[in-house]
Image (cartoon, rainbow, N blue to C red):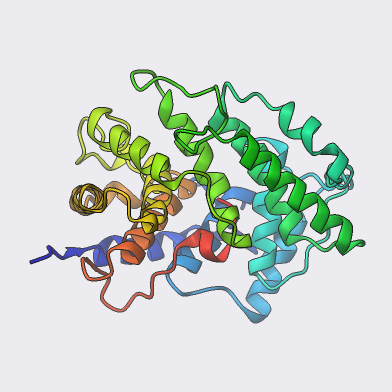
Length: 329
């Protein structure tokens, strides 16, 4: 009989944390902050999306206006963290789920040309694949969610962009970039390639494009799960060690599992992940700290509910994987 993992208390506390983080027309990322910020507001919207509470009407308009208030004349968004493409993609995709039709940020527009794809993607530092994916996925997310003055040219760019990614995925692992796989024993090492792929996988999903080598993704994911303390931490009961690494792994391995490769091993790994997540997130401190990270934990629970619907209890909460609604995180 499948074990039931109850995340109700964690999700209730996460919802309360969002409410407590509201400041004016936005949300603060850090407890005790006096002003809202981009990542706090985006995280709050992400958590609410996961819990089936998408802002609407006047509230959505207020949040959208707050987000636009952080945008400079050249289209960049102000925040003290992350790179410019990650910030812009976070803001633009959040505006879209709030019901807006965001325009392409001016600084991005020259990059959305088919003849620029090789230079843009080839110019990223793929020796740091996790960070490279922030820019690679961020630009693609912007291109997919903003309006285009020439839809034919935009579609051509999207096709060229995805073709480049297909051509440069590793032929064995299905991860990015071919020839740049990290080592299992390094940190982040090989996990950096999987974390990179996560950011691209949910955009492949958005456009309905098959992933490169999902069987290879599963092989890498299972190796990381069983032989490196990067998915399951050395102390799996410590909530501070839970967040984006587990979300990235669960999404990419769980969605890749549709190919039917090593199904029993995948199911066993997910059962272990859900069991340890339920223990770690039951800690009262699991909703403290950085709201951006709390969002990742909520996203993980939503992904587990999507993949293990009979094993995750949320008692009334309608859980939706965040990146299925907003294609960036």
